[in-house]
Each structure stands twice: as C-alpha cells, then as structure tokens.
Amino acid sequence: MGLFSRKQSAPKAAAVDMDVARHAGEAVNRGDLDEAKRLVDATSDPRAHAFASFRFIDVEDD
Image (cartoon, rainbow, N blue to C red):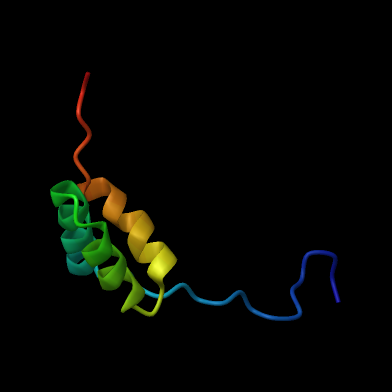
C-alpha cells in the first residue's frame, strides 16, 4: 500500500436541493426561523442545506 492510498473511499456528499435552500433563506428573510429550521431539518443533510440557504439571505447595510 502506497503512502497516499486510502483504505476506504470518501463518503459522497448528498446533493443539495436548491429549492429547499431558497425557501429556507426566504423564511429567514421574513423572520420565520422556525420554518427555515423545519425546512432544512426535513432534508437528508440539514447542515449542507442550511449552509446553502445563506446565498438567499438578504443582508442590510447600515
């Protein structure tokens, strides 16, 4: 076995449903954090979906 070989293959990441991420981001924009949490928790990879939802969250400039 070589120095850089792996014993196991890396786990494949689940695909992120961008519609769910967009809806979660829109829920955050409305202030409905419970709805956003419910949406991402219903997926196979809540962490990845929550992270993807950040691109849909509006940021206010002061």
